[in-house]
Image (cartoon, rainbow, N blue to C red):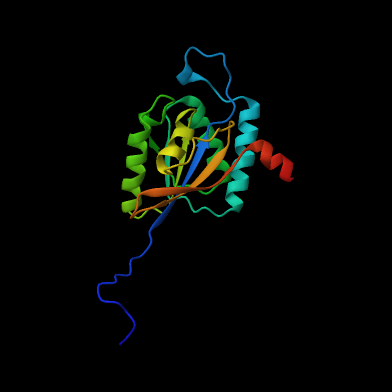
Length: 175
């Protein structure tokens, strides 16, 4: 007897990390919601968060971003402070009223394609809903501007686990 039960199959656990970031603080005075721009505070906080994330060595190999200006500007600031792929996918589903189920399904597809970590830059309420959609039983968390949450997504079970969430205010308390 070799001690291995008949029919036992060893399977590799495929994990993808999803970094979910809310855009930085944005001005309220704009022609419409899609054209709101980051404030100086929004730029500064997004930069601090990107610098902190770079110290966590995330090795992001895919970026998804909302088409709204403040999300694109947040990504630009993050890109200046964190190694990211040259290209990003702009998804209409990442707008504030986007379809969270479609976004979650797309993330599951990406996990089957070998991506190790994905950065998602989006808006309230979608960022909170996305965490709860990926992590069964997880209450939708609040997201301050520029906050980042990390979800560990297991390919085989298609279930995630919220590993951590951090905001600019929490970073300020640590320093």
